[in-house]
Image 1 (cartoon, helix red, strand yellow):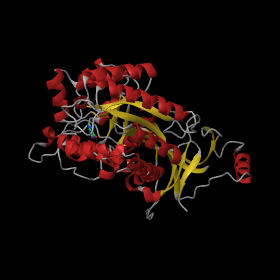
Image 2 (cartoon, rainbow, N blue to C red):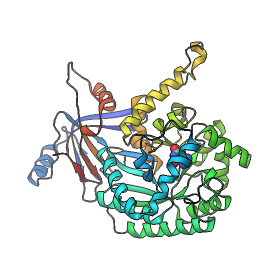
Image 3 (cartoon, helix red, strand yellow):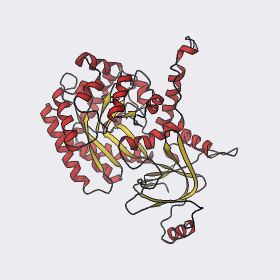
Image 4 (cartoon, rainbow, N blue to C red):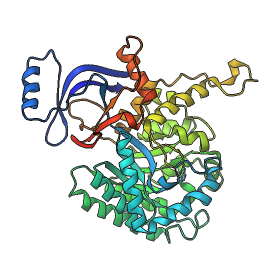
Length: 442
Ligand SMILES: O=c1[nH]c(=O)c2nc[nH]c2[nH]1
């Protein structure tokens, strides 16, 4: 591939290269990056042209790493944009659980998941960490959709067995049954994974504390350890959920999850808007990642995540759409909202309060920081060699084009910022996962 690219080197640094060659090997890794100053540049370019395998970008186009959606509920796709004015508990019980219950119909699951996976790829998302539903057949349909459309999928069979907090038609029958079903899903996915080019990874998925019994939580902690698998859940996500943990356990939910062996360096916890300093220190010590879902947090988070502080503490963090707590499948939209929300956190919201006391005064999150979260931050959270245009990483890439008229000379830095603010799926021309073009606009 020949053309310009942007890639995050760390949370604050985005590198730009104008005309490099990105060489991809047969396994889909970036094998070399050759600059026009390198002596073999012309020869490599000529060989690629001769072999008819050169992707040549126009001056309007630029290549970026594919995005990593670090938190998304696949079965909620039909509800994206529905009932976001309702509180979390009501939203779950009235809108979300009844929809998720429908995935006992594997045919329905197949149709929705085919649509969702294609949509995410068209939005530049090459890897996703999915919550499925409680149903294994439906979750396997999600895995098949990832396989068919070639997206890297991390997929969890959701566990929710607490009869006090879940409806009769949508829960695991018992802790024992939930654990057995989780184990069976892990083994089925591992088997399927042996046949795939792009990996599919099972994920231990207690929905959140209110929906799980202690027996299920303890068993899931053991399964995570036994199979050495990633873990995902929700943690300190709203006043109601946070209060539930305090009332029920007399402990903060981070402490409870930790007690059950569910907070380790393979764990990704969604939201975290109400995590306190002790919780953040625990996350730092244990290597736990946070899936920041800025759009969803506006509706359900009851607070704004201190993203800049979390980056400064070097806690792993990526970005999630949280479909359908968030309405948009686009991580570009979430990049923008992450920056907007951080500004509001800094400035505060009530104009009647003196400016000095109105906000938190912590530092702004920059657009570079947010791009890092959607790419390298997500990759580090999942311990994946991707999210960067760098030798040794998977060639998970998106080629996008500018959609604006240029009235003045623009520096690469200006171009990068405008790309982050203006790109949507109409501007995404091609998507590659592990070196193969899996979406291309004619
Ligand atoms: O945003 C959210 N979406 C969900 O589906 C969910 N379940 C528990 N907590 C949740 N939060």
